[in-house]
Each structure stands twice: as C-alpha cells, then as structure tokens.
Length: 431
Image (cartoon, rainbow, N blue to C red):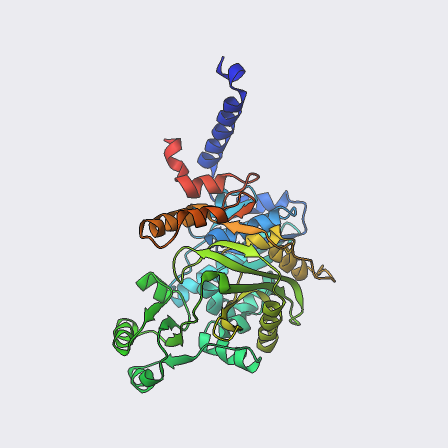
C-alpha cells in the first residue's frame, strides 16, 4: 500500500537501501584487487591520486571520473572520504607523515609497487600528488624511482622551493607583482631587530608547512601593538615566521588565479574567481564565485613564469582599497579546496593536467563561464549561525546571497555517498 500511495517515498527508500549497502561494502582493496580492477578499465592511462586530501581529492576524482577516467586513490586512512566515491579504486597505503628514513623508503617502495601492478595490466600509471606540503620533500628525494614507474604531472623541485613564503615573495617582486610590507623573522635576534619595522595591524604567519595550523588551529595571528607582536612571537618562536601588514577590506577582495601550466610554463587552463565568504576571518572559502579578472590572470601568470612553474596551483591576491592595486598573498602549489568550481565553469584543471601528462594537451585555452558559485553549505551555515548570534552578520543580507544554482563542495547527485558520509556520519544509519 505504501509503495502505491507514496511512490516517491518508496523510491527514496530504495535509494537509501542501496546507499547503505554501498557504505557497508566499502573497503580498501588489496594490491591484487587493485590490479584486477585496473585490468577491467578501458583507459590506457590510470591516474593514481595520493593522498586522498578530503574535499580537494574528491573534486579531483570527480573531475576525472566525469570524463570517463577512473582513478586509484591511495591513502593511509581506511575511511578516506574519496574512497566512497563511485569513481574511486580505493587502496590503503602505508602512513607517510613523520617517517623515519626506513619508513619513507618503505612507503616509496609500496607506491612504486602499486604503479608496477598497474603497468602489469598493460596500462601506464599517472601520479598526482594532492597534498604537496606533506609529500613534496619525499618525492624530490625519490624522484628518480617515481619516474621509472609513473608519468609525473608537475615539477617537484620548483614546488618545494615555493613552499617557503619568503621565496614566493622574492619571485613575486622579481616578476613586478606588488606585495604587502613583510618582515621575516628566523630568530629572537631577528625579531628584536625587526620590531620597529612592523606596520600595525599585522599578521604573523609561518613561512611554510602545516605544523603551525596543527598547533594553534589558525592560519595567522593578528597583532595590533608591539606587545601583542612579542606575545605572538613567544608562542611560536620555534617556527620560521613572517610579520605582514594587514591588507584592509572584505573577503570579496580576495581573488584567485587557478591554473595548470605545462613544463614550458604554457597555460593549458586558467580560472579566475573570488571568495564571497569564508568560514571565519582569515579562514578558508565557504562560498566562492567565478568571475572575469584579466588583471588577476596577468599578474598570476607573471609570477608563474618567473618561478618556472609546472603543475596545478592557486595564486591568491587581495585588492588593496588604499591604492586599488592587487597585492600578492601566496601560491598554493597544488589544487585548492574549492577547485571543483573550475570544472563546472568549463576549465577542468585536473583533466587538463591528465591530458598533458599523456601527451594529449589541447591547443586552445578553454573559455570560463562566469558567475558560477561554489558552496560548502554545512561549513558556511555553521559559521554564519555563530556570526548572526554575535551580531556580526545580518541574516537578511546573508539569505540574499544564497542561490540554489551552485556547485556543492561535497554533495553530488551522480555521486551521493561521500556527502552522506561527510554530512551525517552515515554510519549511524547502518547500525
């Protein structure tokens, strides 16, 4: 009776049953099982994504999968989000963080062994590194071994050099790109000598790596007086630091050039957009939009050419309302959190990177569709609820910005299980 009177509910029930079964069935494959799965693919080249990298990795996986390219995803977490995607061949690899030399060698041996298994099927593995700050130094040390097995998709040495923001700012200045006033501090002596040079308010940042965020749960520390600067330095003095003038203005003045450039620094895909809203001040993007921004593209490409860059990246700028000029903030030497917007705009950066690696690079730049939004609803809504409660945001203004024509950072009708796992901890429905 229920199925006859409520066919929509019946269909929804069947869909949830299928998804719950898919959730139960998901497990990383063994090496032999990966080899068997790859042998069934119709493609001659097989992407290997390492590590899974959460939303970044999921967007990368879908950008390839929707073009008929299934990928092996290697991550030490047996419940990695991308493992639940219909486009993934999941493989649980050894841990790679804080490795001893022996552990590092074992990880590289395992990764190359995975590549050899793919080669044994008559296919060629293409290696994509999705979390550069975690693996770059290791991949540089073992590049010769990786090259024997994989097609590589970026210049690891250049990317590693640009992990240091001091080097980024040197390259930007050589390229004629404006930068904020910045003071570098490597020691207590540096700090004491540089303290009179600081321009307040300013932001204390690490020069590279994720350890600062892991310890303090923030990207930057804002200081407004010499005493606050000293207090911040005392907390983080074991890091290589930089104190940078704060560029005034809202998140809507934060612009991005996303790109993939080949080994000759020729752009094969260019995306420009800006942040509409972050999850908090100095936080990551919760709502972004594509837009035409030729000045952003020109200055970003000037930086990449000066660096001799090869690979995917995000170059970030902020427009300074005091002089109307763009100021370089940083380069993320990988695809970034909201890069899935690029494919929805017609500039599919992961696919372009794949095509270049296999020798099928397009000869013309794809044209971007402007005005497309990327949204991470759960992060944005949670942040806005706190801001509304604190009186920092007007709810009516917020609601006017909401559109149902957007790219969801995790959710997708053609690949729904990762969103259910991420949003709702889908496991409770399985008990």
